[in-house]
Amino acid sequence: MKRILDQLARSGLLYDDDMTASIFAGKVPPMEELVLPLTCIDAEITVRNDPTSTWNHRRIARQGLALAFLAAIACTKEQETNL
Image (cartoon, rainbow, N blue to C red; front, side):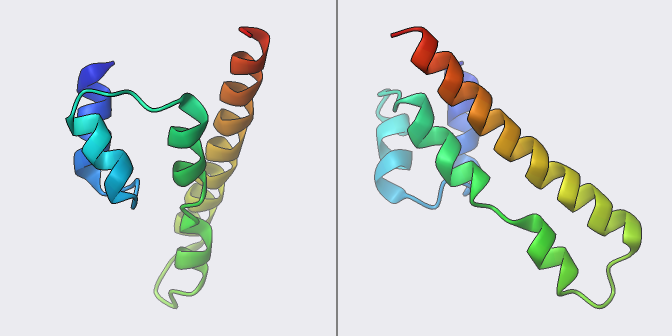
């Protein structure tokens, strides 16, 4: 898990410097704090506004967006059941 978090922090997907710094310091933030920034990445909108994108690009981006939201829901529900 530490390796995955390290790669996530280096990827630039979190866009939160404080969260990235805490991951590099070895402190694991709560799951909902990790999932929410990732679900805010809206690749579908980016691809939709690109006139050179194909229908396959748009479909893949929309599937990725849906998967991110479903993952966020699953992580939140899992954490609620562990309380």
